[in-house]
Image (cartoon, rainbow, N blue to C red; front, side):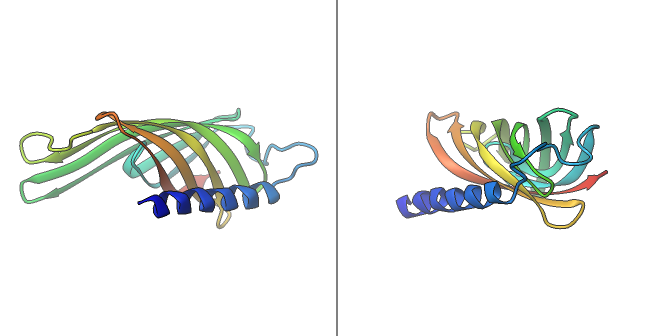
Length: 165
């Protein structure tokens, strides 16, 4: 377990170093096209923001928000989550951005009642978003996640979105 947590921190440290190396540090750090709202659809998976289909809105400022919802039903058992995340850009370049922000979610799993010991989660962390192709972006985050049973665990979150420019 400790090896996994240390590995996540090392991976995020290397990832954030490469993300900062790829952005334009001279002049205006606003990427073209961020003067208006940009919308994206995709998938997201994380213990603090939820798992499922994701809608992301980059506002004309340094702020973004993301709404996530997903449901799976196998026979009588239902598993679902709903969540939201706010992102504030620390650095933004033409192909990458580095951000931080809070997230929250609620998870459900069971037939007639929720069998999860800690269904409500809050998180705060940092992440990077990378332009894979013109409109396809991939993001990875490291989030300190508070579970409603009182435990706090640093965990990763991932997402992929297609943006409509």
